[in-house]
Image (cartoon, rainbow, N blue to C red; front, side, top):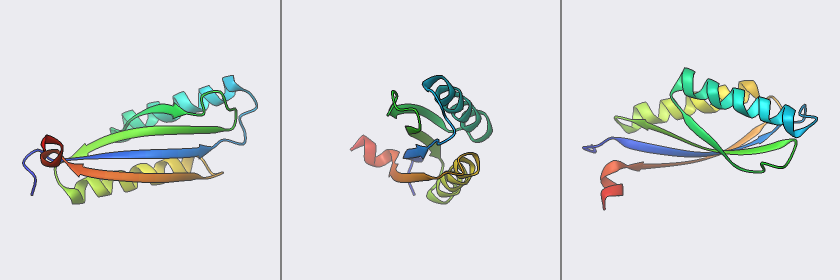
Amino acid sequence: MSNGGYVAVMVIDLQLPDAGSLKAKRQQVISLKAQLRTRLGVFAAETDHQDTWQRATFTAALVGPDLRALGAAADAAERFVLSRCPAGANFERHIVSVEDLRG
């Protein structure tokens, strides 16, 4: 058991086929990031494909007191993103303890 909890970093690659312009894409991205933050406590930033209309990549972070709780929270975030992006999304997840980060 870690003394400081755990951190999950998720890289989320989204397909947004309904976005017909950068403006439309940005509206979808802003909405999804806000919903992740307010509903699930996930903080995300768009980290790639900013100038591509129908694709976005987020890097998201969340924390939890133990692996079980953090895994459940990350699973919920993935389900939420998939429910909002029916064209699909790919997820990459990395989990590390705060103790490991301290070295």
